[in-house]
Length: 252
Image 1: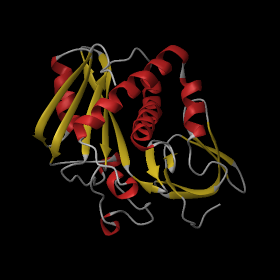
Image 2 (image 1 turned 180 degrees about the horizontal axis):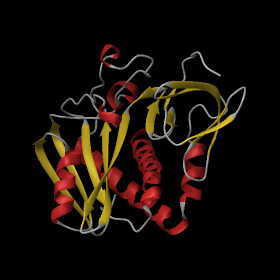
Image 3 (image 1 turned 180 degrees about the vertical axis):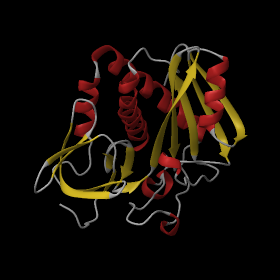
Image 4 (image 1 turned 45 degrees about the horizontal axis):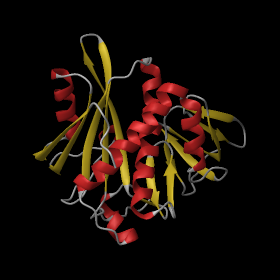
């Protein structure tokens, strides 16, 4: 696939965090940039959680400066999830692929990737750093994952496919450009529709965990901003942020 015009690319052998390196590069330059590392020594997930990295897996970050209100930047999480889904589908087809709110990609119900969004500022502008981790060759064991988390898998284990990180970056970058351009030109609505068409658990009972509270209900929708809409026995909740589990729990 053709590399996106005007998008830079930096590949390093080792780094502590591609997000940190991408943020540093962003402050020294301008425009969009991909930073990929063959080895990452201080991987992290959402809310500072542990993210295992083994050589042969994919660790990269994308820096972009978009003219959107800061409150809308979180929608790029869905943009990145769609790009990642489509890149994986290019490798082996869409069978068994699904998206878990807000941005995990699953293969046969097991997590194969994660996305982390962080902001960066330069001369009064706010940019976005999107960290992407994909288990191409290896997946962490269940005992290192948090309780009730979905099992993890790798592309190699789930589909018998071996792909180099650099090759995967060449697949992912054009997909992200496509969905980012869709979002910028048409707004969140087509991104939301495409995300819902690939969603796992839509219409099913899920558990949404927030700090100090858990709610059980039907995953009814995502609203026009990307928030999770949960229909419990007593209320219709709109949750901008939560941890979603498909295992049963006490709650509404």
